[in-house]
Length: 245
Image (cartoon, rainbow, N blue to C red; front, side):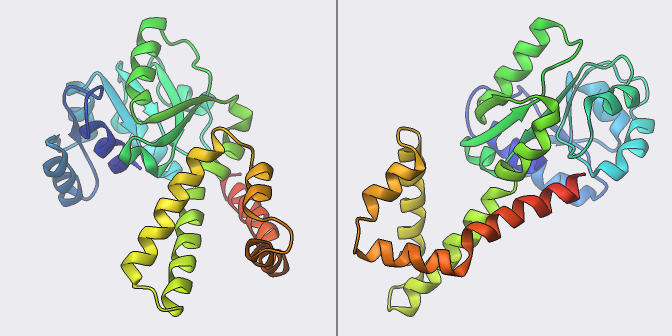
């Protein structure tokens, strides 16, 4: 997730003036820094001392270890940790302004969704600056903190579901004689166009427009219903929520 954010910021104007990276795998940090024109630091303490804001993108289980290394940090923290509420983050980093966000992978191409919990005890000017910087990555969506896990289950995980559906459709096209690359292109462009259409029409209206009674699309939708696609996606959301909780 940190790499996707960094690539999105590096893709145009509006991101940080400079970026530095630190990872337990130093070669991974160096590779990303080279890719986006950033630098690396040997440790978290050095990273924090050189930066106005730190994006915290570690596994929740590593929080206590990371907090010990960042003891006394005064700069802003942007946390993308799942299942880690602001109350715990503020206990782990007393005195540091903390913003809890949940982005998804399309931030890499500046078409992501960035959910964020209402900030607590962050100076208004700093809050505005951080949100402006995150806003270049896509659409900012304020979400009450008690709802952020549910939001994550349908926006952070969903790019993987869409990719799985895209792969299945492209493979079906290949079996019917299409070139694999062309099939993938057709599916990708159709998904992109449908996403834009969803901005102006609700899902039911699009279904009705594409699937008139007795047509080929209606037949396809009936097969999806028989295959339990809707139930499977609902189960996927529930499974993700169980992991978060």
